[in-house]
Image (cartoon, rainbow, N blue to C red; front, side, top):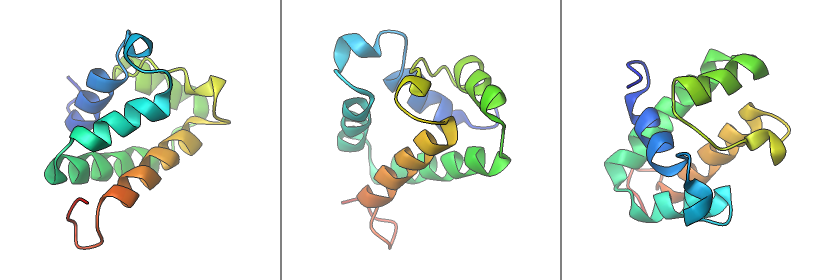
Length: 106
């Protein structure tokens, strides 16, 4: 369990686990599944911790290592995205689309 980003650890571990490709055809479908299943409070917690991770400004190698070893993320984003930061910003965008400005989920 990651003590700094526990909600993000739970998100990646539950949705981007080692067998995620057996359940979904793409990473975006994994994300859609999460967005459809998560409650408002969970969406906000994930968004906040994701922003924290982005703000740390880890270089690409450190971010890749952190996602795998600390957050249990088994999606090889580098096959689809130019960088981990761009992929995380994509996730952030999807979270922001789902959460109303007042903090309420759609």
